[in-house]
Structures are given as structure tokens and as C-alpha cells.
Amino acid sequence: MQLWILGDPIKIEGSEFSDTRAIFICNHASPIDIFLVLWLTPIGTVGIAKKEIIWYPLLGQLYVLANHLRIDRSNPTAAIESLKEAARAVMDNNLSLIIFPEGTRSRFGRLLPFKKGFIRIALQTRLPIVPMILIGTHSAWRKGSLRVRPTPITVKYLPPMATSDWRSENMNEYVELIQALYVKHLPDCQKPLTSDAS
Image (cartoon, rainbow, N blue to C red):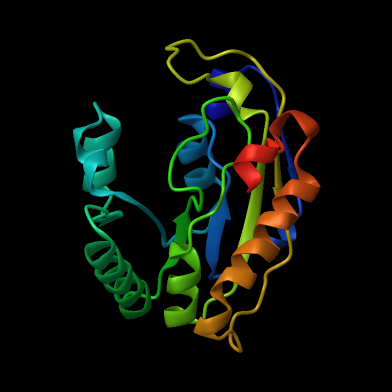
């Protein structure tokens, strides 16, 4: 169905890394991203989003019905506790997880700074992190538009990153390391602006 909606074939690279229990992380530039990553991750994978997603027409209702996870970002303490609860749910139910580390959708497709939430979950679950790099979705469905445009899209999986020996005091280093991978693999039109990367 998604292939028909988008009007162009979706190129998948690194699919050998897709069928594993992991924390799948993705850059986020379009509503299409959510449907795409749910389609391209293993059965037993759930998403995690801000609790306000329930107010999004249709998407919010579908999100709740599918038992995806929600976090409270009203203040730092609530956010950290929500992430701990999400990690417990992942481990208790033998799940994989999808998370958008930017924490919001990029307006023009350029990568935004990563937040630490996905690292906190990795430290608690010790699941490997599989970066998924989405290229072109920002052109297929632009922010503020209701029109889906036929656009070539590439989904690139990078090899899993083991987290079994990660330490909480190095969180900033892990964030920088993984964001640098995205900067390396994204096309110039999706790389962060200098002000975004700082």
C-alpha cells in the first residue's frame, strides 16, 4: 500500500540488519516516517512518542489502539521516569522499539540535534541500537501539507551497535557518535545546518 501511495519504489539498503530485536532509531522529517518504520521493522516492535500524540486526528487513535508507548515530556523528571517505564515494558514483553531521537519532526528535512532518551533506554535494556536512515521522505510529504508527492525514498539500515558495555557517564559521547553517523550518510540537503548541529 505504501508503495502505491508514494508512487515510487522504496530502496532498502542493509536489510540484513532489520530482522533483529533492537532499538531502531530514525531521523524524522515526515508523517510517512512513522508508517514506513513500522512496516520495515520486525513483528513485536512498538513505537514511543510524546503523550500528546493521542490528540492527532486518526494517527493518535491508531497509535493508542496498537499499544504503542507514550512518554510525558512535561518536565525533565517526568520524562526520565516515562523512559524508565518504557524500558521496563520493552524488557517485560520482549519487544523491539522505534524511537526518533530528534524528539520532533524536522521542518525541512534537515537533521536536528539528538536528545538522550534513546541512550537512556539502551542503558536500561542493553538492546543493540540499529540506526535507520530515511532519505527523501521530507519531499514526499512536506510539513504543513496534506499532499503526498511521488518521490524516490531510500531506507538505509546501519549495522547494530552493541550497548552491553555502555556507561551512563558517557551518554553525551554516544549521542555525538550516532548523530555523526547520520550526518555521514544523509545527503547534503538533509545534513544539519551549522546552527542546528551546535
